[in-house]
View 1 (spheres, rainbow, N blue to C red):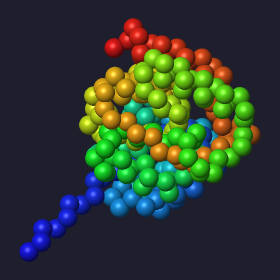
View 2: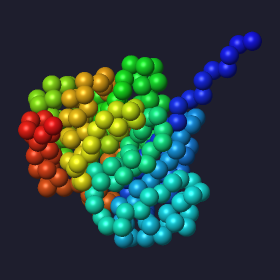
View 3: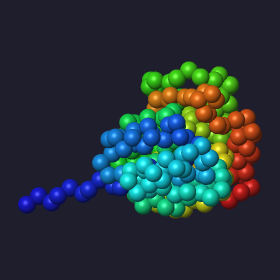
View 4: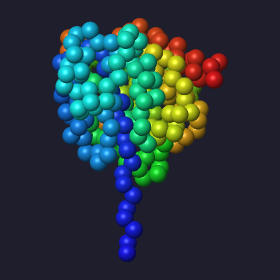
Length: 238
């Protein structure tokens, strides 16, 4: 008698959310449809004030996903810290609550980990031939500059350090303490996984960027914080 194959690992999708009433239904539906056999959807609402919380309580919490509510707005990094602590899956994917990233791409993001080659995967907007919405020139310049600066300190050659799509084995996340509360999370986590020396892969992804009028939140102040975080977490901070 042939032994049955092992079940697929549980994948936790952590969705940090702040004032995303216009998109939260669509992203939850898209994540629910994503071609991942065994998944847990975990939303962390970072004290939304636009009606998102009411929607989550009425339509989502305990039905389509687990929801954790912050009582004070703290930032994306803080929401992810909460989500990582509550995740139960062997693998964790970060998914923004807007519609800039496509959950149908989860299989390609998961493949290097499921194949035993990677512990961490970055989904890069700047490699491969996937669709990429044309939006802000200076955002692209800023992203490439921050990635270059991060690579100079970490000595790894990722092409998109600021990408939302980052995937981790949960045992890697257990070794990392997230300290940044806002968008400084991206350079912080990059520095800390690089320091661990774990295998990191990149895969090309599509990007459906949105404008500020459509709800984009990151700004120039976050860019300065990212520079500070790159220096902090790669030099004097352990």
